[in-house]
Length: 290
Image (cartoon, rainbow, N blue to C red; front, top):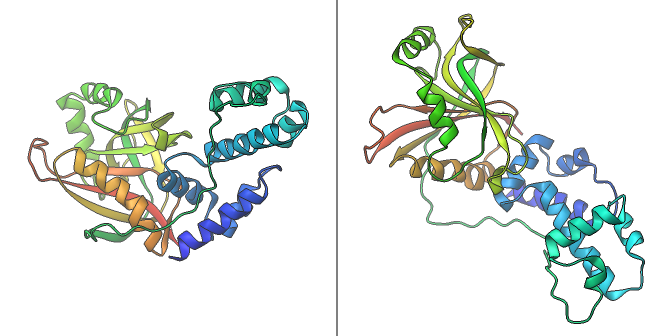
């Protein structure tokens, strides 16, 4: 696939520049996609953030240099992007479990993170139902909160948000809903780094999509006109939904002619009974043509 081939070219550039400041705009250019999309795709395909991968690769090379040369620790630290011996020692110890000085002793165990390459693995060929929609700008009106990133199971902070919505507020929101996706929706945006390691936070909204004005009692997120990839998910909640989300990034994006662009990821649950074995949901992701 061209995307994986181009992402591997970007990884080559990163590998060649581990002892220098890495220009992420150039990295994204080599991958023929936006910097935003490259970082998101890397996280989903690699399971760690791009910055964490670079940190691990630099500390792997630093450990090799310390054990195979007489270079001073301060020189190795500066070479791999650390401004002081203390910051280098802390990072080195967090990864390897020992200090740079201790690493020079014979018989010490060190961790190695080899250079990464991307390959597409075909597993079973299960179909994915999706459609592409062009939408004018709209608002997401509802309640919002900065919440921790949680992958498996329910997010307790989001559960607390739902408790804030009584029937009176829900009915007020439903009266505002006038564009797709209709009804009560959830949206996530402004993810901090570490998403794939289940670290960090995101801004979460529970509300409706609308072109109406936002009442004072609710929060408002302006969503510009853009193209959306809309994926259907049918199955036990929330496990099937989480599986679909992973497949979008691991399978659909690498084989499609689209890349993700900045904007909220929207979840629209179509069925009220979440205990049903076939809960139907839609995942809306903003995209642009490559």
